[in-house]
Every structure is written in C-alpha cells, then in structure tokens.
Length: 221
Image (cartoon, rainbow, N blue to C red; front, side, top):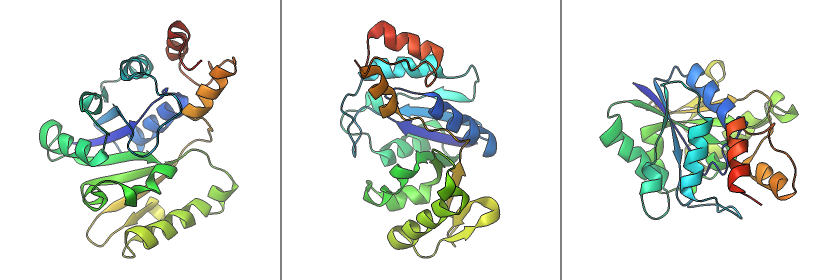
C-alpha cells in the first residue's frame, strides 16, 4: 500500500490543491490519497477560518469521483491543535498499518518542519513531498533546489544527498524528501478569500460546486 496524506485548512479548497493532489497521485503511484482538513492549525491561523463542517463539505464537493481519493475527518474529530505526527500515528496504527506514507506539503510549510511536534520521528515515518506552487525563473535556475538543500543541511541533517534524476534528497538510512514542481499555477486560499471580500468572482479558482456553495453560505464576506 502506498498512500498520501494531504493536510491543511482547505479554507477553501481550490483548483491548485486538486492539481497538486492529482500530480502526486500519479507520479508516486498511490493507492490512496487522504485529504485531511485540520480543526485548528497549530502554526498559522488565517484571519477567518470557516467552520470545520463547511470546509469538509467543500472538500466533498471538490473531490473527483475516484475511489483513490478519501476524505479523513480524523483531525476535525480531535480536540485541540492538529499536529501532523498525531495524524500520522493514527494512520500507521489504525487505518493503513505497514503502508508507505507520503506527506504532501507546500514549500512554506516544509521550511518550518523543524519547529513541528516530534519532527525527527515524523521524517522517519513519512516521505515528505514538497510541492512548489509555481515554476518561475528561480525554479528553472535551480533556486528552489538550492533553497531546500540549504534548509535540509542546516536544520535537518547534513547527511542528506540530492539525487537529481529522482528530484529527491536521500538519507543514508533510507529516508527521502521529494521536491515536486507543479504545473505553473498561482492560487492560494488567502487569495480566494481576499477576492470574495472584494466582491470579485472566484469561479476560475475553485471548482464550480465549491463556488456555488460559497455563494449559498455567503462565506468569506
């Protein structure tokens, strides 16, 4: 079993999330991809966080009709901050024991992983897939590779070595950190919220069903 865990506030879920999810699903040959909305983000808190039940509903409306996509409410049901290591432990012990786990996250999130709860054990348990939001000149010139390399060596371990053919850093003990550039797209949930507050259309940024739901519930205004 090869499974991916894609966590976040999804406030709201947008087309960028779905493009990244599809790319990870295909490139890493995943049997399951779990979308895991958090109840309370432990590190960053947006200016407005839609109620958990509404964010869950938007994810349900957005996900493709593909059995490999699964919505998990494990963090919604858990009280307090949503720590990734607790979620990973839940999947390892109760949902998919023995599976190879890939943790999908954005660049900004990964560059703070040394501040996360039990981050060393997390890196021993999952393979991070660091998704870049856009492929700009810095990416094309290797800027993102250099940025990640500096962070990995200075904050995590100097034993990681970059394998260009696989776009990953590999540790001698087998741990891997993957870099995954996505198709050029520049969408963020904060951008969607800001446009809605300004009275502008967001139908080009979110799935049609999610756009209709946001309008129906008058979210982010």
